[in-house]
Length: 228
Ligand SMILES: CC(C)(COP(=O)(O)OP(=O)(O)OC[C@H]1O[C@@H](n2cnc3c(N)ncnc32)[C@H](O)[C@@H]1OP(=O)(O)O)[C@@H](O)C(=O)NCCC(=O)NCCS
Image (cartoon, rainbow, N blue to C red; front, side):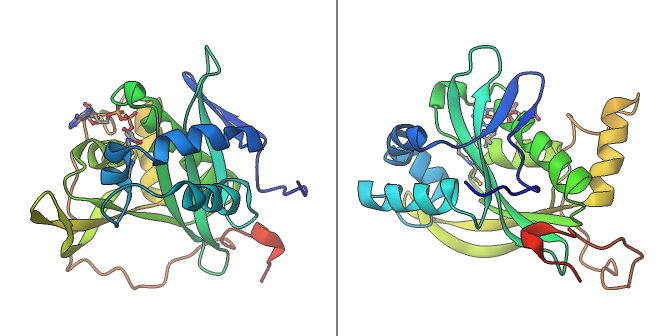
């Protein structure tokens, strides 16, 4: 694999360690993404991917050069439990999209995914100097929305009734976190403030001016070798 300075070998947290994917992780992807419950939470289409789609997805998105994708391992045991990624890294605007799937269902609800997201945000804002990370999540995925909110993401919009699942319509929720949000949250988590783990998902006020120019350093300079 070509050396990519923006792409770390690993990111280490207290309970998880994120490592670059290896071709041997394909088997785990096959298991995760052929599961109906994982598909329900992560796919626009009804039902899981076919094996050949999973293989293409793995090759392009986990091993390929276009996204910063890392495997999530439990630190103590090294067990591989999921994958997370930044995609569509845009160095002109300092933004990227975020994705995470903890594929091992017995590892849901134990904080591993949330810690992986925090590590990715630290890297995105602290090392890559990105300004904004965005994602979308289905409105029925309460655990994911709560996890993202505790990492500083706020709800900034909804595609109303964009998803048909289990006989009814659901919204697709857009969330984002800005570098400043993350720094404030991190400082609160490090210090004595209560910001963070108890934070409820909030709607971003739509009348707040968001288009005023702000001072910034060069966003994401060096990502994919692009510099302004
Ligand atoms: C979504 C995901 C990344 C969350 O990571 P996680 O480590 O499992 O989440 P946590 O254990 O930190 O729980 C997050 C929050 O959800 C709550 N939660 C846990 N299980 C829940 C459930 N079944 N229903 C609702 N909330 C739940 C937790 O209490 C916690 O809330 P709090 O911060 O207010 O205490 C992970 O579960 C996952 O990958 N799930 C499958 C795929 C998926 O949904 N991906 C996201 C697609 S957008």
